[in-house]
Image 1: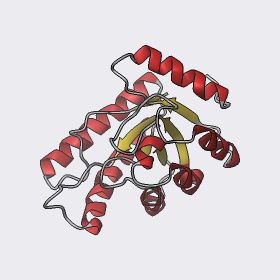
Image 2: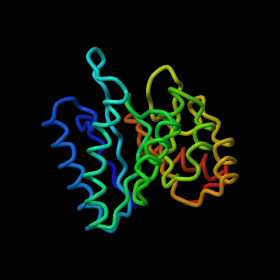
Image 3: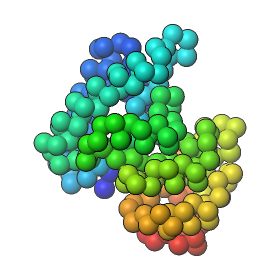
Length: 204
């Protein structure tokens, strides 16, 4: 089981110290909740940069790393891992995820890879191979690359047969989750997606 604080106002990369402090507080509370309900992982997106007045990449990296260190201290105490997700505009590529995880060298810092998010900035297949050594969670949904989306499997440009083959090739035995948002008919979208993935070798 994993928890994902999916509210977009959390931002470990904010230049406002108060926003960063509240983000860490909210993530620490999520870590505690995960421990209490028996979840082993919380998924974390590092945040987003200001589109006009952002610090340079090195400073953003330092700010994010400081917040992650504080969260990892709570993870150690509660027995929960952090899964860094490729999302938004600070850490959105597989290479960045791998670099940040390597620099921290913390056993509870792993990677949660979102193939739809990846497709907006790079090949999700190439990204999966890059993150293979620290991959703990895979998020599955479709997108068309024109609009950031999490559509039902098979409705976009991602080749899920190739994704399945890569996961087998890298020996991934962790969890894959459907992260489909389709308000028109959520139940039908999830059923359709699950059936499409089962046909490709995923098991419920």
